[in-house]
Image 1 (cartoon, helix red, strand yellow):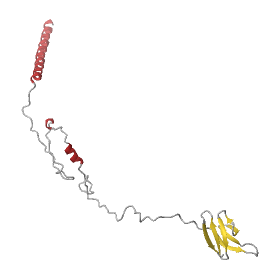
Image 2 (tube, one colour):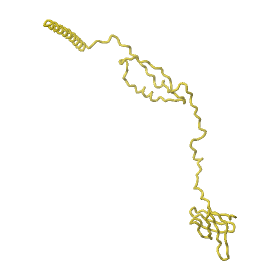
Image 3 (cartoon, one colour):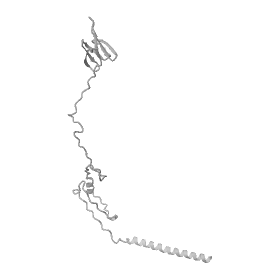
Image 4 (cartoon, one colour):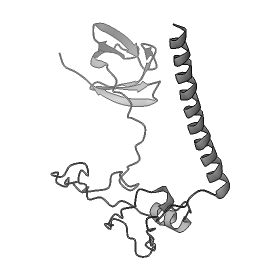
Length: 201
């Protein structure tokens, strides 16, 4: 048992010594590369020079051919070009009414207006106040006695009014003149005078 245990310890020590040698080799190699500046890559992919199109050549709606950029960070140019940005912002989309998200859509036919949307000032006629409402009384007769003023009989719905010249009917209508075939009445709120003919029953 003692001999077997001693053999296992020797194997562990030898394995640890080999591992330590490998780690030291890797550390020394890293330190050497750091102080020597590292190794340069053998060859770099050629940088593609992109020539921008001038704003005078670029036109709104013109088709541009895409340029493929190699997938390498070293080829990217971080320089900002204000003239390129200004040319891109000045582009305006001039559509024809076609659905740009559908290949088979046709342009929409937009009907042109036949006249002005808003009427001109000449077409707008100045409207005055609305006319006063008609007097809703009916003159259906009168009575006259010698020496007494003439009294008229007025009807509105089921109500009958008997009034002489100068009287006010229903707190609104003033009797101005009573004639055998007509009566003249003033609508006090509207200051409107109307003549009502005699209505035969």
